[in-house]
Length: 254
Image (cartoon, rainbow, N blue to C red; front, side, top):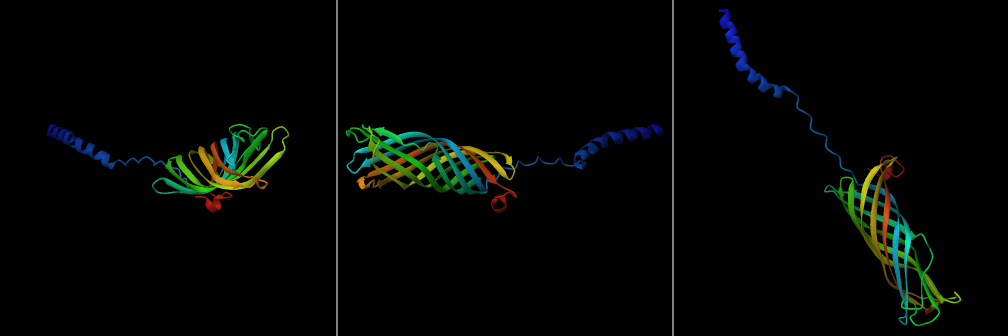
């Protein structure tokens, strides 16, 4: 009798083991799914500073068609302010205003030759861009902490010019006025870290600025010139996007 009981218990254990084992996973608590990676939110109000190089050409022509052209390479700096919104599909749209200027305010010059009064001897042509104001739109696409974007809009520059006698330096005519134009460019930004009430974003931007022809009536009309200008810049950009309860984040932050 005892032997039968032992045999029966053994058989029950053999057949019950798979069922118990199969039931173990169902009783164990489910493993939590991995936490989702939170993508960076590019929406917000920002201020920025730019530093870099600029290549400018100012093409002028007297009313007679005689040339008055200068070229220069300058170190440029700028300040910018803007607001942008990230859409659900990772597109980012915004608006930005800026002020930029060459560090060196010296006139670029050329002397009698192909770029200055052609065959008129003893002449110097000089011109410069003092500063540029821009207002435009910005469209980008976000890739996590990275964003590539294009930008463009209205530009306005202060352009000065003169022509003088080379030997004496006496100015024969000069003018200074603002000139309307446009700009277009593209850049790449990356969010680096949080600094107090802002996100620090570093980037690089290329910008082309163009100022179509405008007449500058030097000396009341005599020695007046038709002036056009172009500027190309490549700038490193440090942006502070204001968030939280900081000085700007209270009104514009996420």
